[in-house]
Amino acid sequence: MTTHLPPTALLLSATLVLGCDRKRDDFRDCSGVDTSLAEELPTMLSQAGLYDDIETESLAENALEFTPRFPLWTDGATKRRWLLLPPGEAVDTRDPGDWVFPVGTRTFKEFTRDGVRVETRLNLKTSDGWAAASYHWDEAGSDATLQLNAADNVGGTAHDVPSATECAACHGGRGDFTLGFSATQLDGEARTSLFEAGVLSDPVEAALELDPTAAEGLGYLHGNCSHCHNPTRDQQPQATDCYAPGERNEFDLTLPHDLGDVARAPAVRTARSQLGGPRDSKVLDRMSTRVQDDDRPAMPPLGTELVDEEGLA
Image 1 (cartoon, rainbow, N blue to C red):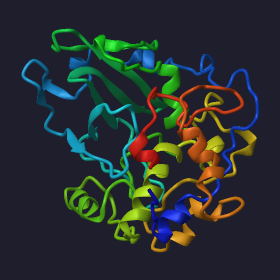
Image 2: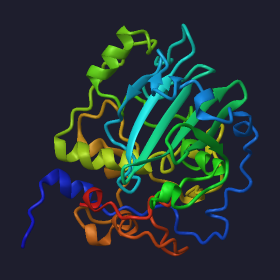
Image 3: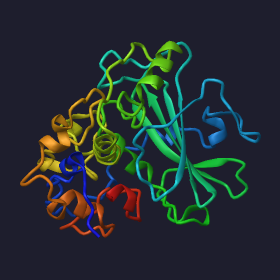
């Protein structure tokens, strides 16, 4: 069967060479990451501010649920996300491409796998930086306990929970640590509503004006790759060496919120070799495996054991 792709899809299949070609024994070693801030987080999720009453699952009044347009693939887990700002505070959106969150901001992400609620992750901005760790739900689903260490097959499912040291592997690649709540990840209608509600300091009006094929493909790279593959990753205040692309990280897979022309997209402009050659693309090659070989590191390299066949397509 012959599949005919639209021109934008051919652009998306451009040959990209990711910056993880070097051999590094410590590529996946996050043991040197400082977790002292995470160690100070509340012991129980019921104490962390998301719930007024965890037994009835009554959320805090200021818990704002949101859904990013281009979510990270985590082996089919269902996720819910909330933002909690300190009273009277707003996200500083004067720079549309670099939102800044006030001290005291909390973001929560809940994971359900195979019908079992397995973990809720918390990121808390303190005056000394971001504290990040996971809470593992008990069998009864009545509360969740802070865990700093990684755990496999949590709750009798195939879901693996990363360690607190690994949180910064992805989140540390962005200016203010937060992923999924940005001008790119929230559409214009959502941003307008948030500004009118006082959640955003300034309106962000520019639109992502791409056809659906281009937006879906480039958005997938943004949601799954750009937190590491962007030119400023190593300069971020909480960037780490673990899972870092390193000195050859010359690819910007960030999808700007105001992109109107697919040919201007970083993922296309940094393409190597011939456009429209998916069989030669190292991006697609490494998305097609989960074997963590030093010569062919799987992408994404963390938080997944299953290839996202739909995303790959």
